[in-house]
Length: 444
Image 1 (tube, one colour):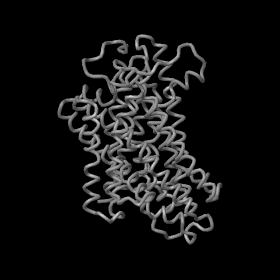
Image 2 (cartoon, helix red, strand yellow; image 1 turned 120 degrees about the horizontal axis):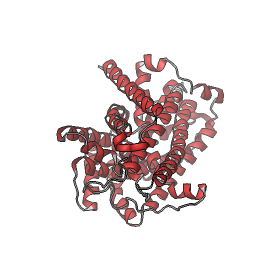
Image 3 (cartoon, helix red, strand yellow; image 1 turned 90 degrees about the vertical axis):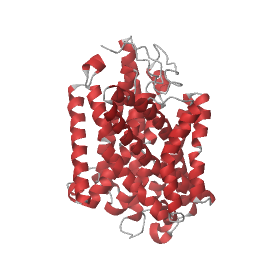
């Protein structure tokens, strides 16, 4: 087993927080789980960011509850892949970006870095625009100014990192709780048809044969299974201190990190289902234009669209949840940008410059687009669904290395994937690639 070998001189992943959190030894189950709880919430926010809102609510408004099955399957796939990513980081002491760069040629590594960086940009399109629009809806601040305010969260992140990683985990978990509460409340008010909701979890062949439905389905997959989350998960799983020379310590860390991840991803699954159910219960068959956050905001205050439950309170809660979702997602997006930049191109510099650079790389295209189409939020938000489909296309470039590494006995030792995980993960990868090729051909 190679788990106890010395690491390269390469800097540790997220070096300033790597192994910074002690965990109790010989403690009870719940106390130990509490010590490991936190990284899962940072992973989960990527699965319920503003990009999910447009695809999930739009999916419900257009196809009622049919795409709930896609959310269910995507969430189960996410749980499997995130557990593999966490295990990779815990066992090897390196994140997915570092291992990919180490085990590929310089040219291939550079190409993969470009693809991954574009995926980060696609993620930030939804997060930054979502946060900017939320600020505009809540405070009447112009969208471009709101985007600039949102971009400044990198400074907040620097301050939080100095006060300890647990503070970041707690803040993000609180923001997730706000989103969960808001949409639970709004779905209860919408009174969805429960039997039809349950029927929606059964897959239908129409998802593959109907191109618009497939486009949205892949958008949901792209919004649910995020490439950058696999890199993030392989890194922040190392924030807990683990003795890699002790197999029991490694096993324990893998076990509780996976439990934390699955609990938080279950919450993300519930939120995504709530979004789609809300879209179906309130907007299916209304012929309302719901392609934008502004449309959704106004519709929740329009009795002609949503009936008697319409109120300014629902609209404001929607905007507050949008801001909470966007801000929590941009925090984790910035961390992912650092992990990818350090891992793929070994770029080391002072933390504040590094974080500012990763944020600028991501926000600049969004800001340019916002300036070009100033005052045309509809055009700006058209980027959102496309960005989620692009994430689905970019996903195999993260999944394939992850599957290869976690199946490698020389790298993982006794912690390599079990046979069922190995073949299931390869099947998932193959299906994603085939569906993406099919979608591209259909669009062309």
